Length: 242
Image (cartoon, rainbow, N blue to C red; front, side, top):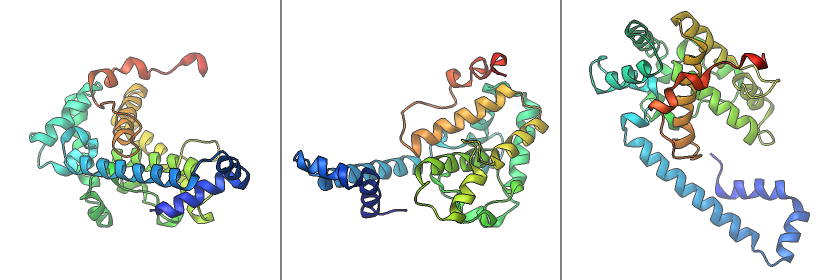
């Protein structure tokens, strides 16, 4: 993770010498303002980490509930079931996904240490395409999170990544024509086999993304996996645009 000084250097490079001179000529203490801004951001991030560490079920990713649960009947399993019933999955589909996710969680022991941390705070983008996770070792929530991480990196780190790092980002991201969207396509393939609809895909991705936007990126305070965000009508395909 970049230090405050490294972030300041990057911001100053983006503003440029001319812009910095203009601000300073106006009597603005650019260095002090940027330092204060970055320190405040760091404090906010610490607060989010503490909130995520609390482990409340409504702050957990949906596949993380499977990881935490001993059975579909305990508090984590019940929350898992509640969420998926909320987007119209049948009890059979819920159990099918629960047991499939359990199996996936035991595929790759290299991920076991990372999974002990709050999932929404995990980093998924590695340094090269060769070291990125294989398609069969990630749960549905992890497929959403790795895509979200890559989309963020695509816009935030375009000028600071090495060629190999950028190749890994483009492989995982789905936010531009040049990106491969590898993990998004895996998500679609898997849910298609589960018999999910287009709207259910959209609802799952949006609700998981809401958790990341709130707890990782601090974009908003909106809740996820509530009646409003699970209403499938808002995720219907716009046939007029196809």
